[in-house]
Each structure stands twice: as C-alpha cells, then as structure tokens.
Image (cartoon, rainbow, N blue to C red):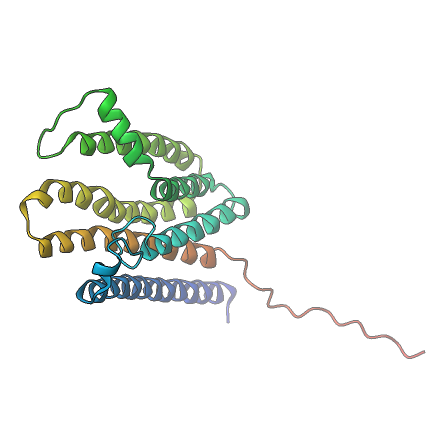
Length: 248
C-alpha cells in the first residue's frame, strides 16, 4: 500500500473512532441526566419529600448528587484539557478552558454568583425590574463579570494556539452555550415565572435547569475525552529489535 494511501486510511480510521466515542459520550450523558431526573421524580412521588424536603436526591438542591456528578465530570474534563496543554504544541487555549471549567465548579460548590450577586444588589440598592428581583440582577451582573474575564483569557490564548486547539475550542464553546441556557437562561426564567405557576410547572422548570447543567457537564467531558484520545501518540508499529546473544 502506498504511504500516502496508508496515511489517509489511518486518518480516516481515527476520525471514525473519534465520532464513535463522541456518540457514546453523548448517549451516556443523556442516559445519566435522564436517570437523575427519573430518580428525582420517583423520590417526589413517594414519601421522600415529606421525610426530607432537602434531600440530595432532588437534583435541583444545592450539593445534590446530580450537582456533584456534574462537578466531577467538569473536573475530569479540566484535567484532560490541562494534560493536553502540556503535551500538544501551541495549545494554551486548552489551559484557559481548563481554568474556566474550574471556575464553573468553584461557582457551583461555593455559590459564588449567588453570594456575590446578593452583596452587589444590596450595595447598589438595586430594585426589581423586568420581572427579576434585586438578587436576580445581582447574579446576572456577577455572571457577566466572570464571563468577560473568562472570554478575555480565551481570546488571548486562542490567538496564540494552533489549529487543533482552536477547533476543539469551538466545540467547547458550544458546550458553554448549553450550560448558559441551563445555568443562566432557565435559572433567570425560573425566578420570573415561579410566583405565577403551579407546583408541577415549577418542577419542570427546575428539571430543565438542573438537567441542562448535567448535559453540559457531560458534553464538556465528551469533547475533552475525544480530543485527548485523538491527539494521543500513535503506538509504534515497528517491532522492537531483538537482541540475540551468540552462543559462546
């Protein structure tokens, strides 16, 4: 087989493996999110809520099992991206992405935007507007500030990175879009509609927010894992030379 044809075949095979890994990752993400939502629903339909209304099995609770699973997925994605920052030339943007994921995890676990948003709303004496209360506007302002800092770091490192790292950055940006819809968009919508809807509709909104964050975390991990595998060094197909000792 000519070298050029062999190289094209190997590249096509690698692309096929990446696509297959991506499909498996997406399927696992959807299954995990569905399982958490189903578990939450079964818990609420039983006697669990009456016994423990703040149970970690409710996925919209802080420190819930679902939130911890999402944080674990993003930490794993950050570790994979940080590892490739060191091994793939001109990939500093991957380090920036790892930092962004760590910031998201810290915000979830330490409730940075809730605490800082409340403090900001109090300091600026914000009032309700557009259906959002002062806390909601404060949280949006904090999210905006964190977003500007993160975007600046990503843009600077993106311009200094090579083509492979730039390509995966666009996939990671798509994951940010999914996270933004769940963590910011639906969250703000919940604040607006919650006083005006029944309990069932409120539950649906909460599930959309929490499951959206779970799906985003799984997609981050899927993209990071696929890139990690796609850029892994190929094993040397040349057999190691054998040393034969001459009988003496």
